[in-house]
Length: 150
Image (cartoon, rainbow, N blue to C red; front, side, top):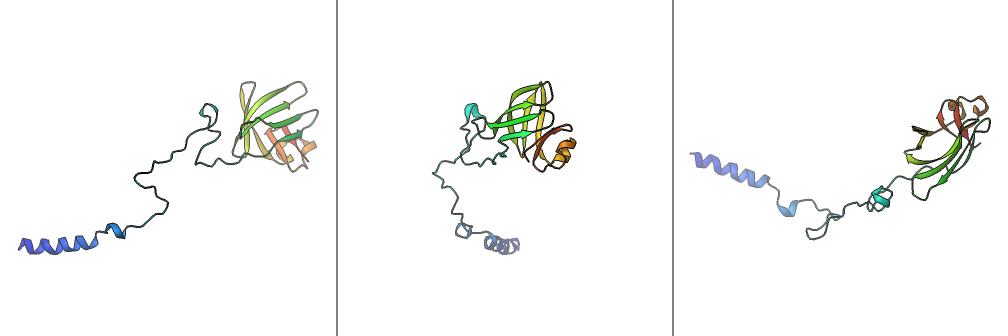
């Protein structure tokens, strides 16, 4: 009696099991003999500046001169490495310097006098500087420090 119940269960299981020929095909799948491509860093010291097979987001185009108030100025230049910038700044009446920055999303992150700072795209109102209030294309580090193009 047990054999009679097992036989229909085996037939049903075999009917529900997909055949190899029924498996979905993927024209992009690698064959068993082909090596698997893995992204490898090609930038200097593996800094991730370029990868094979992995698209890196395009860095923002902030290159050029940005003007602040009372002599504040920001010059943004390409550094030669995608997503990295050279920043020359006069950020108040007394302090100026050059810094390396790196694109992170739509910002540029840099270190100035031991503090990690971020240039963010804003309008003039976000700078909290009344002389820049009507400007539309600005980069702001923090309230009271901003630079605009228009």
